[in-house]
Length: 208
Ligand SMILES: *Cc1c(COP(=O)(O)O)cnc(C)c1O
Image 1 (cartoon, helix red, strand yellow):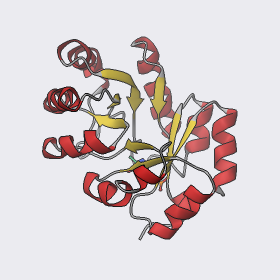
Image 2 (image 1 turned 90 degrees about the vertical axis):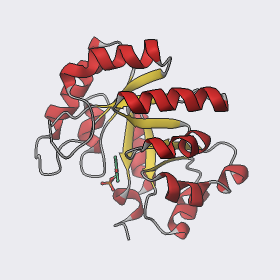
Image 3 (image 1 turned 180 degrees about the vertical axis):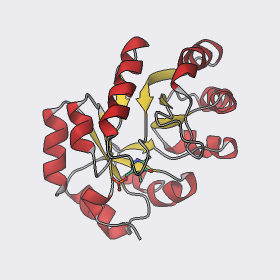
Image 4 (image 1 turned 30 degrees about the vertical axis):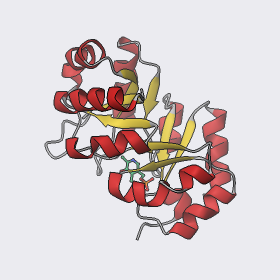
């Protein structure tokens, strides 16, 4: 699969392609930038800052998405670098994000991560906690919640179940955006209404 093909599929479904550049060598990332792509995802704040802080000045139209878990001690740095947060999943993080966004006078759109597979080791809130958590984020923290995000269980051969559940939850809570679909399943996610697909290895090849 090439960048162009995946861009075309995303465009056909009115979705955004987030090129996940985590753990990729710099020349691969530069190659994708040279092809005109400007939307990237990273899962670690430190690594992302090293890669992107200077490039931000060179490419004024970059959009950077944080797609990995966020620790509260990294929130300040994350708010300074990223444009969109995909992994909001606990009250303490909502508090801290809200504080930092006010301090830096930035208001980043956030996705709430849902643990659709109810996996003990995976972050994300349970589907039945969404109503309360969303109210907390919007009313107490005045965060701008733009949609929902999920990562289906790794060995699940039916990711569509998770995508459909995420879509149902988003519709019920009047949230417009769905961050779902990776290299192995972005086509299914697009057909089920993804507005943001997060694709790494299908664009860049295997990670280091
Ligand atoms: C790494 C990662 C991706 C991209 O995975 P690929 O299978 O390489 O496309 C997408 N979403 C999240 C949350 C990730 O951590």
